[in-house]
Length: 289
Image (cartoon, rainbow, N blue to C red; front, side, top):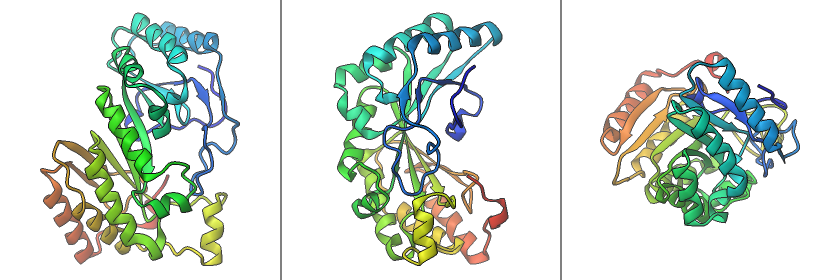
């Protein structure tokens, strides 16, 4: 397999075949993110992608999952994605799912019929970084997408048959905006009703623009207890009517939370209260991106 630059994938794709179809991120301006700063976005040649898949077929007896890198592979047009998906379907019949990172605007640019076509060709899930439900926070972090675009994009993905796994980041608004961040994120989850929600906790790489705001005092980071207070408030404001798998068990999190909403909401909230009462948080030295 050939890769350009550093490669990133969601934790749940740890055992997936990683196939780079685009290089970098189409936006690449978020103030907290350092993932694709070493790359200029471009699309890989189809022949190169198919050669990598052919190499994988020769070397791996069984490939059950494939993740399409980089930052937002769904940015590719349907005409560019379909040959890739068709090749996977024909040459990896054992493959159970194909997934990719996506921006909401990627979904919004495509028609309902095009998204359904991709789903029927095997693209079963898209990972969307919403980060926050607060319009102010989205503007502050230079997300490049509005609250409504994120909601509409996730709804459109889910309506196609694909599942959406949406990521939010605890602590992203700092001490000044944590309440709005928590409340509006909970409301956003309720409105977009994704199949999966992943909650990470902010860790700031010294190289990103947000680090300068922290150094200057413009932004104050939350303590572990404040992060959990924020998470509790977010869950209080999350009211979904269909099953949503909720995970906050990333290496960055102070407390591991796993459950399904709405069934496990009260249990997870009680778990947070207990951890806060007994100061049962992961030590900073064990947190990582």
